[in-house]
Length: 463
Image (cartoon, rainbow, N blue to C red; front, side, top):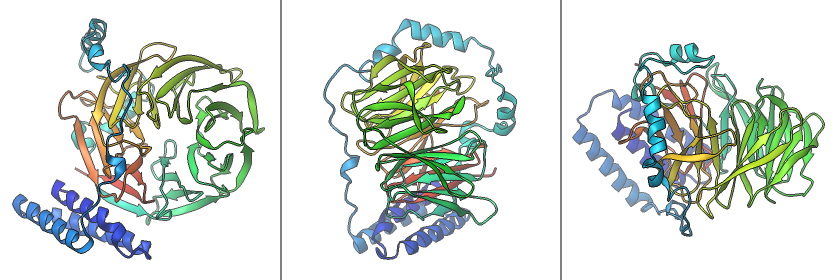
């Protein structure tokens, strides 16, 4: 879809909340039809000047009908107490001769050399010979799910190594498992049982189990086939549970973070805490991520700190290793780890959202999980818990891609190796802050969820 038509759809989506407030299903049908019509118009090749004129007139008519859009308070930059954190030291790092020497070392490798992983050839086959911009030319809406309308969807995730199975959780207290094939896409099963908003969930490696956390203070284990709750584990401190993740090498173990600053490793087969598998952070535990081998765990809190822990594979014991103050007083609401991004970006890396109106990319510099800021990307995020991801395929083109939600209701694609004009693509169509994004395994579909409860499935343009 042409960029101007996407802007038209974005304007319609933002005013969509004002339409038929008592009939939310109509709003979803309306935005689906508008997307279809605009895609058809994009193929007609109207003059750019006419498109821009239509956008202006459309915006003026909607403003006259519903009134001007009010600026959301969450869009404003939050004030951060001054302290010399890693954000302040970014320029120092860029001038660090050791960093330049490391970068030079990577640049000396042959241009065609490949990242040494077992999935390299599969990645090459799926990526093809397209450029980064061509490969991430998502535009058309494949489908819109609205079963959680008017309740925020804070997390969503495609199943592991799957093209068509997607799950999301909602502040309405339920989770949904959706299937995108066969057509038409539909909700396969709804997981109900939590007594409060669902804050996070994770797929097991085999996709047969989902674990979820809730403000009701419980961790629940679900059978994804029939939606049964297999086990309920109550927090011993009766605190709100805010995040969870599976141990990647042992899916019998799940790590949970709560509102009383505690991390805890839980054996989901027994429902019991693992001895030695607990630790305390400086604030409410909001985000968790393991490295691929499962040896290092990073945890972020609402005081602006990221902690690294060494995980004992044999016992499940956690040992606190390092602490990094990203931005004092800010919420570390998303952490995503990646061992290799592409042949250009060979560093083990961490992607962090910290409510500082920037998406932060860190380099992992040692086996203790020490972090060093590599670069940042501008986004709108002052208070909402926005999440980001690395692309699932390692790129064999020039560059590597990360994707993030944003409080301006857009989805952004950034090239991590491009020094200027890093935005590869920008998707518009949500009616509220975009809270989470997820790729399917071959990058043909991207899912995004927002604060109004809408889940949009975007389809990659076929060249």
